[in-house]
Amino acid sequence: MSVWRFRLSKRLSWPRENCAAIAERIRRVEQRPSIHAPVFQLSDILALVIISVGLILIVGLAFDGLSVQRARALPRAVYFVGDWLSYFGKSQWELVPAGVVVLVLISGRWKIVPPLVRAAWAEIGALAAYIFLAIAGSGIIVNIVKQFIGRGRPPTFDEYGALVLRPFEFAYSFQSFPSGHATTAGALIALGFLVVPRWRLGLLLLGLVIAGSRVVVAAHYPSDILAGLIFGYAFSLWLAGRFAAAGWGFARGSTGSITARTAAIRISFGSPARVAILFAGLLDALVGRRIWIAALKSIGDGSYDDARSRRHRPDEQ
Image (cartoon, rainbow, N blue to C red; front, side):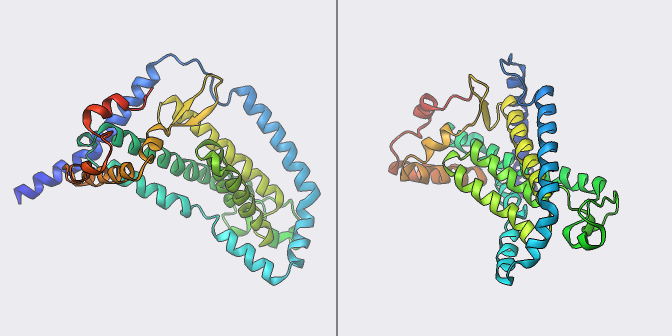
């Protein structure tokens, strides 16, 4: 029994060590002098709010009432397609995979893994944490704001019109503004532009289709959709800036632009042998002993040997 307790205590110490290492890295980075202004300064926030409010009012006055009539006139088949697309706008599709990745990676014993493998999984873990916090953070804020506003959803249009407000009603029928699905879609669009630029057009179209499906199924007005898209995108951009300031997952360029840290990921996916060693390192970290790395070293090109890993290790800045 004492042996099992010892092993359990050692395994439980790995997440603590990993969290302490992350905190120490953030502390070191934050102590460095920064040459960049915050992603959103006060003037930027005021301009964003003014422009967003203006656009939302224009869209609301021009299209909210019309959208209810058009949605009711759509064929039943179109409604079913919209309902199917709307299902994929639920945040669980991003939160569950991202959360699982973070929990798995934080549970490993990474000090036994070659530096380049460790750096690649650190980048993957940081981006997974970003996705989780961007979706969860924006979603929580929107769900709180909904209660303060209490706007009626389209099914209440005939009785109350499009502008009825019932703050703190705490009923689904009065939780229309902003749209939670559209907020998630806005975060996905930001993800495309910041993390996977090759997919940005696809994620942009996906986000817009998912957001628009909420109007098709008469769950939201167009102004709700626009507000959710703007907030989800802006929150995700702000969060990426906070990650960059902590030196975790993102970096600021010379012009202040935000880019994802993926150097080690790109190197690790450079060949099938490196991919195999990357996942062998994950297994070794989770087990707590070098097993698969040693077994697969013969198929690699030598870049994951300890000495060469240190020479070719991506700059952590």
